[in-house]
Image (cartoon, rainbow, N blue to C red; front, side, top):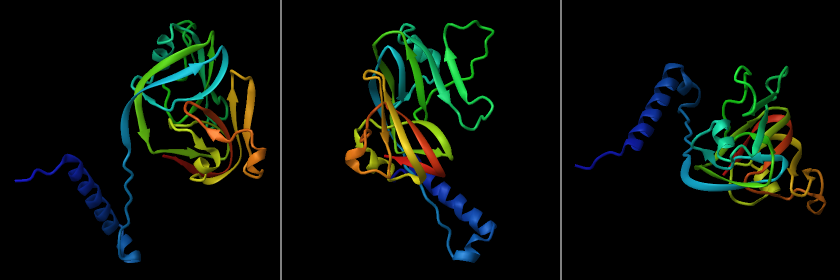
Length: 221
């Protein structure tokens, strides 16, 4: 007898639940059918190397770390990382979340984990290359609310910025990236011609400031 794979059973269960939900709430009375969608996320184990330069680095974590605590990340660099900063636009009163290893134990640190969705300002004592043990997950869906959002680029491949952002469901007016080794900002403005863009490509471990004008989602594959 052929064995049914567990993943197939899970998919069948999800479909049955969706159909039952639609029937219960009368969805089929409107359309005659129930529509469901299923996104399959592929997971690859990767050894990802990121180079950080003395000073402030605007980065994203293209790999999903196995250990997501900031302490683990800082400890892996022998404390060469001074601090990690995240911007949370939902917290109007206190949008900046910080983790530092050198603060007293009684100080409450409000950045408990790092992930591939967010961008981070990382303050570093000296130039270092950090090996990150983690996984590459694709695709990634990043929800973007209006206003300035600090996000990562969760991909290891270099992509044309216009092509990559074309999957964004919503509006934006500017995208900024910062290169600490060159001490300069790069900008992408969708209203300008390609040759006038200083930010033309997205690369692994890049952090991005995006000025969002309409709520939407950025689908990164």
